[in-house]
Length: 189
Image (tube, rainbow, N blue to C red; front, side, top):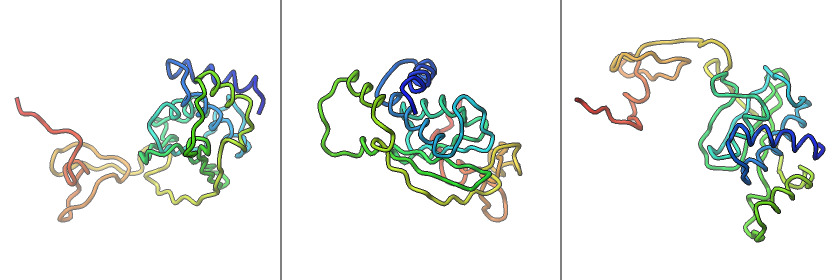
């Protein structure tokens, strides 16, 4: 991984995200490393790649920009663990690698500027910045890219639910927001 490739991918990620920050800088390097470890080239469409993100911060935009994976294509999965980590999964080979930011997990931080930090990310080999762990994933048909494998309608609100994301209560399908509660509350007017 050379600095020129890094600068090109970083520019793409900055344009996608809207500004340069530490999360974009390290996320770009992490995404490039994930592709490299799976033997995938930059700037290519990889229909066999799914990436699982464990944080919904700036790093996520860098990973999306560099890999081309997206939630709409069902190749980018958000796990909401609050951890600076991503798992790169090659559907063809079954290889899954979880990459964590070893630098972010240090308890002692040095007082570098944003520019110094970005420069360090650019020149530091990825093996020194990240920890890589081989993992096993179990994906069901509702987790795979492509058209929904099943759809149903919620017996309470009537809304369509795709990919087996419903639950059964008393033998009737219910969306999870009706069955378990939702992040929103309907206001009657």
